[in-house]
Length: 202
View: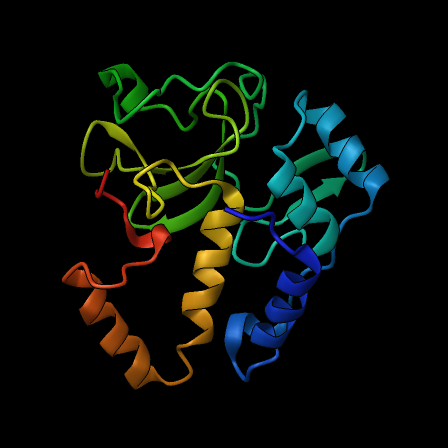
C-alpha cells in the first residue's frame, strides 16, 4: 500500500462531516505535536505512525474515540478502562487468539486501545505494542472467545491507515438512506465488504 496522503484524507473527512446530519456535523480538532507527545508520555507508549499522523493532521476523534486531556492526564473519551498500565505490554495475538475465561470479564486487552465502540459489547482495537503494533483487531468476546484481526484485501491484519481510508471511501459513496441499506445488504453477502465490517472474516 502506498503511503497515505493525510492532507487529502483530512480534506475528504472534513467534506464528509460537512454533510447535513453526518456525525453531528462536528469533527474534533487535531492535536499538535506537543499534545501528542504529552499523551504518549502519560500513556507510556509511542503511537503507531499512522494513528499519530491522523491525530496531527485529521482529527483527535471522529470515526474513533476522541483522545483528550483532563489536566495532565490523557485518555480516550468513553474508554472502557482507566488503567493504562498494560498498553506497553505486547499484544498477545499473532492470529485469531482465544482468551481465557478470566479475561472475558476484563475490560482491557494488553497492548491495545479500545478505539471504537461497535455496539452490543463489540469493539475495534488498535494494537500499540508488540509484533502486531499498528494493526486493527475486532474484540468479538461478546459472542466468542476470540480477538479477530480485521483483514485487508490481502488477508493480512489491516493497518490503521488501511482501515480508516477504506471506511472513508465506502462512507463517501453512501449519500442516501436507500444507498446505505443497499450497501449493507451487499456486505452481508460478502460483496465489497469494508474492512471495519469484516468482524469474523479472519
